[in-house]
Length: 219
Image (cartoon, rainbow, N blue to C red; front, side, top):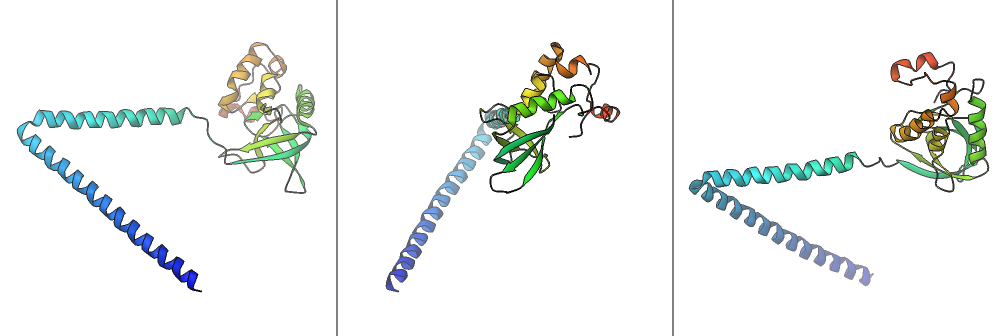
């Protein structure tokens, strides 16, 4: 069709003109860089301390910009690799819930990542499950999965935007494995809530996890 040929011809002309403009810009930048290099070479012949100072100053500015950027990114919370909503059906125990995704007509168990909870047959285990069930059963929850989480695990938020893991830790129903809930854990420990009134001596460091396996639900 003639109109298709006209469109192709127009696009070809535009791409050629764009390539020509980009080539001109590149040549201009290259000329400016070469002129700056020539200027610095001539300047270094006349005043070496000055050129050394300029180079050191440029290096210092570059380093400071990189350092500020690195510190800023280091303190930012990681972004989730997946976010989705689901209907929370019930609490399986204090550290996992049964959900049903909107696009997946099947129930599945979701593990609450970043925390550990007592087993159901241990002190505080049933209370943790009851608290969790009251918090989420029959509601829509938002689930965020982060790098390192297994597929059936994630951070859960209520429909009001409250973090479920933070609530469990804050009320003394879970130990915080993730650093972001250490503040809530410290407060619960100070007030001797829940687990801190029973398992006050448990320290979930990597070396000591195994000895508490009979008390604590697996993640």
